[in-house]
Image (cartoon, rainbow, N blue to C red; front, side):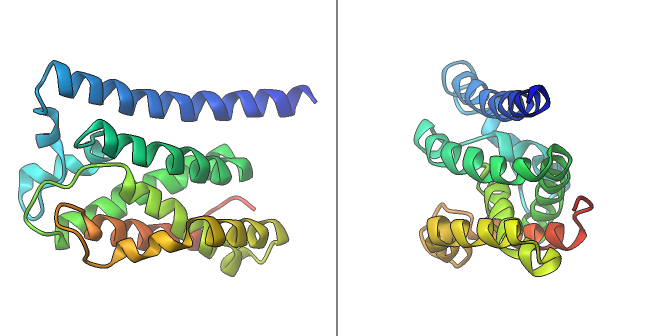
Length: 185
């Protein structure tokens, strides 16, 4: 029982820290830097824009943008973390790097910021994991995620101006890749 409580405490701490960093950066960006941190996002096909692969998931255009990303980040992130914390770390890194590089390589010439690329990566991972591991728990999670978040898959297609559908698409594809190469059973 102590191990389960300790594991849950670690999961909450990791997610709360990451979300806290996002909110802290948005507060600083809005009130101190006057949205200057947003320039650290992904700027496609420009060398300086490569730094955005690391920074973009933590930067958001507004509090509304961040609020819209917070709940799915926590829910989908925790569903991955419930399998194992190392899975969460691996999937997060793959989605950030591979999804970010795809956005840098093929994205529209604009700054791309926000955690939605990683969130779409989590979505892709959770939906595809069952295909690769055939565990009942992965299938149940895939069904839950499909019913709860499946409608957001339209976000991988060009839609509204100012929304990085490329980030969504490459995030989702990187999540599928992460499911293929996830090391934990």
